[in-house]
Image (cartoon, rainbow, N blue to C red; front, top):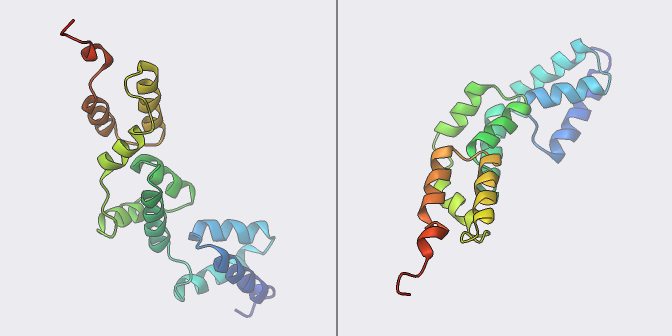
Length: 159
């Protein structure tokens, strides 16, 4: 790290990492936006990756765990957010499949469904659209929507 500006770029990168764990691509973008030279950025990035300060797999695992803990987003949205952060799809797959996060998407979708009045057809449709927008698989949405009887079946038969 003997190039001009390398020390400043490295210290800036450490300040960024002290605030939030960043992917390699996010760090690269931020350093370039700060007008550090490409060679300087490459040297700093190599040093950060070598010392373990930047680890895309760790970022992916933490992002998945946080999203599951919040229980608002489905797997498709989480994957898209990770890809937007510049994380490679192989690393995303490794983070999903390493067993650190055990997720019951059906239970999460059921909890979201509780916010809606499922007797009202409009509310049922809103719930289904919300689950779809949040990236839940269509198979989970179908199961969640089928677990509640439709309004037509609720008519009183004893009258």
